Length: 94
Image (cartoon, rainbow, N blue to C red; front, side, top):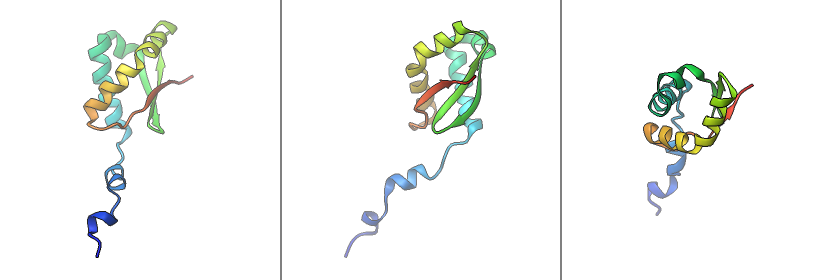
């Protein structure tokens, strides 16, 4: 006779509680403020969250370049705040 734990897929149980867009945006703002200060928060805006990516819009190409260069570090900090690997990348929105 098998134990019930062997029948359940633990990964599916953990991923069933998807994180909402508002929570992701809140944590994104916290990380941006820590990394870039008040100006970063004013010039980098999250547009939407889909497929584990945060799509962002920037006020200029210099901000877009800065985000692109530091995206791995930013994603890592966001995931640390969320407590799980919910975000895989940042993408620029047109």
